[in-house]
Length: 83
Length: 83
Image 1 (cartoon, chains in turn brown, cyan):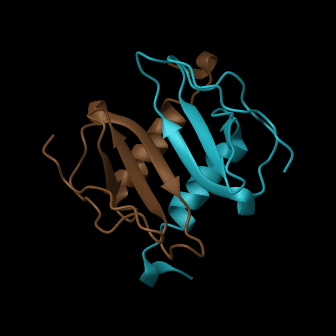
Image 2 (image 1 turned 45 degrees about the vertical axis):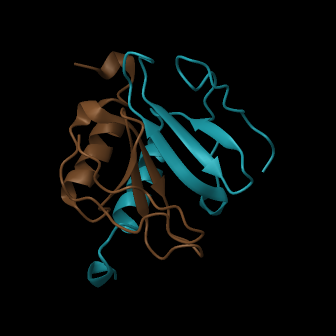
């Protein structure tokens, strides 16, 4: 995956740019949600990639919401519920 | 908030114990989702607290799913959609 948007950590918002391109799920290692607060007026969604990079995702884009809900709901099914 | 369950980082799953008690939203700094994979058969949900602690949440409990969906959907509303 080509380097897209590095996460520039500053003492306010962590994301200066957000990436709207789809991230292949298999390159995803973690998804971090940073709720908005006094430090930053927007929620931030930071994807940790298998490559070790962190990139900011667009919290408003539907595929990001679908990705989070898939990871949590589909993967989060209690073992007995899984199809 | 009393120390609940420290996150024991090991080279497999990161969470040895999960906390089912409700975490007051205002003590929450971040929520990290670690999809299941070869390193761990279960998705892991790690809350970063304002106190600096990290605790593992139960990915199967409904309040954790509601919390993530609130943070992402409610907070993630594009500025013009916000009520």
